[in-house]
Length: 361
Ligand code: ADP
Ligand code: GN1
Ligand code: MG
Image 1 (tube, protein in one colour):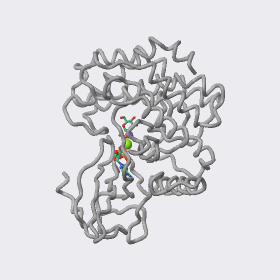
Image 2 (cartoon, protein in one colour):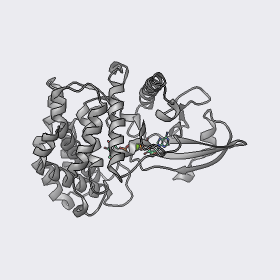
Image 3 (cartoon, rainbow, N blue to C red):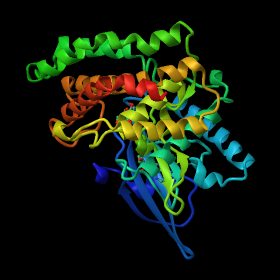
Image 4 (tube, rainbow, N blue to C red):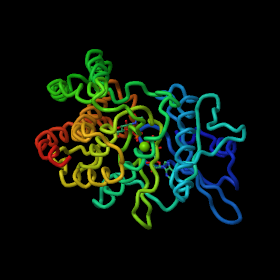
């Protein structure tokens, strides 16, 4: 699939200097196709990120890129105001030679970003200190977005974290059973149904005005934050496709879902998957140190954010398995099923120590 793109020609549509040298697949995102581009100049090499936007998911790329232009410009101003380096501390879009934020080649949409050098995104927590720093970075990002005018943003993926809607989609996938996989996952389906009362816990709190709707990131897993290789500090929050109205509890919860597991999100052996209360405490501390204004009720519901985001994500993986792996990128036949199972194991673990999680909040 990499070969079908004429990378030198695509890259040439953007305002980049130097001669095209190389373009390789990069990162472990589940949604877009991401590539690292190397341009060569006499003075040395410059790198960029090139992404083919998943336009099956983001059907209105114009609106998506409108959001990203606004959010990146807003971050840039804030970073400059605090004396930081915007080229490293926020995503910087490279415009096309037609002065647009993306390029459409007739069938695919592409965008480019400045490559943030000497920083790394991690797939698992190797060291609690890294996790703490990621929490501070996401907390800062939430604090930053508190001043962002939500009415400027399009809701590009409506009901993204509406767990009730996700559950209805799941039921519909079970009912349709388009791939005939239902019989293989009766146990997992029963597990999801047995926990269906969880679904309303956060969306109802938002609808009833118990907790505020804010502008949130909505996809706060560890590999969406870059840690500086020299200092270990979280420098840039990336993957801004889902910045939309949401709840702090979603953002907090999604980080916990991904980072507090003792195994990878797609570990096939659930015997290796455990929820770490210690890491939960580490993240909570880092997040609260940076997030700024948080209401008592939001704070109280943070542990529910962890349970709900994990339950919801597991349900989404299982839905995608039932629908034939059409949403998340997969690398093996049971990939989405493995992912769903890890999430369900984590929810079981979280519920088993829920009172301890609540006591920490
Ligand atoms: P997806 O939406 O598919 O998750 P991301 O935008 O998160 O795509 O990008 C995938 C990966 O590419 C990230 O996890 C990160 O490792 C890397 N990446 C993305 N943007 C940059 C950047 N500007 N500089 C360096 N690495 C980046
Ligand atoms: C996707 O884009 P990425 O890989 O950072 C997904 C998230 C899921 C996550 C599960 C737009 O995130 O919602 O939580 O996979 N993003 C979208 O790993 O659906
Ligand atoms: Mg990502």
